[in-house]
Amino acid sequence: MDSLPEVLIWEILNRVKKTVDRNSLALSCKRLHGLDKENRHFLRVGCGLDPADEALTSLCLRFPNLTRIEITYSGWMSKLGKQLDDRGLFILSDHCPYLTDLTLSYCTFITDVGLRHLTSCYKLSSLKLNFTPRITGCGIFSIAVGCKNLTVLHLIRCLNVSSVEWLEYFGKLGKLEDLSIRNCRAIGEGDLIKLGHSWRKLKQLQFEVDANYRYMKVYDRLAVDRWQKQWILCDDMLELSLVNCIISPGRGLACILGKCKNLQKVHLDMCVGVRDCDIISLARESHNLRSISLRVPSDFSLPLLAHNTLRLTDESLKALADNCAHLESVRISFADGEFPSLSSFSLNGILVLVHKCPIQELALDHVYSFNDMGLEALCSASYLETLELVRCQEISDEGLQLVSQFPQLQNLRLSKCLGITDDGLKPLVDAYKLESLVVEDCPQISERGVHGAARSISFRQDLSWMY
Image (cartoon, rainbow, N blue to C red; front, side, top):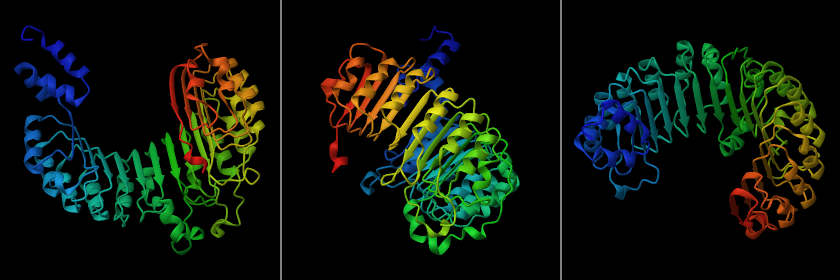
């Protein structure tokens, strides 16, 4: 090793990605040990960090050029030793001058005091907090004030982040590009208006409401009619994900859907109040859209929005087909208990979208309108590479046998489909047309029936969902 050029040694180190392999390599000789100290930029620690402060100090001294650190205590128990606390974040701020990306998961002993220590990390650009219950809005505000270069902020299950002054401050700075707020119970859709000018800079927004918490207090705390109208420009938005949100006409999040000129990916999951006009506005404005995922809620009984027409129809799919010429991925799902006669897309609506757009991935879950005729029509889908059918009970062996005629299909997933048997897969056996086949919980398909139907096969059968 001593005779190898240093450039080659660096190349070797850069190609070793797993931490355990890097550790073993560093112990093989002094030269690699020294170079690894300089080249190690990422560190992931957690339950094995004991005693926490001493161990973290030692690691920071050993690797002085760390830029990304992830601390996770998933599965932690008291017998595993004391968790890292505020003192640990002080150690990071004091020993890691190049820190740009920090993730804290299940760190239940870290408080706002610890976050204030991070304000001396001037290069910090990404902070992700997952279940840090002692942190409040005051701690997030101190980060907003002290870390001027922060562009990525993820808050997941931060149950005590109640005040939203930090949102206003980030709005004034106008630097946030990636914001994720998931299951933070005290932050609602209406609070997002406080981002102000930051909407122009946002490239990714993920907002998820805790469904159980929302439905328990929707009548008491949510006043849709009082939402301030938001006239927002989201020219830089590339990805938008909304889960369990309430969409009120002309207000709140509804305004975002029609203002994203460069949107490429949208995910609307169990969002009550989404109407055809919202999807049509999105389609007409977002000509670069490449991926759309719609999961339609089954609960249409919320009196708060009873005056609205809560139904998506083929008009939404037609607008996407006419305006989104780059659409490659479509996922449509209906929640359990959904009656297709109340709110559904017809077979013709789905097929228009597939035939007008270069759809490479199509996933249908609980879509009763899709049947053997739909599979027959997909024989002319010249771009389709991946097909997922979940709980599509109108499909039979006759339709499934047509899959062998799909011109470009490489990946097929079947899950919880009652009407298909081993006979439906026979044309695929030994044909080696498919790269991968996944069969999950289909009661009439056996493990023997999938043998030889693809180069890579995954089979699982758990029928507890039927009972």
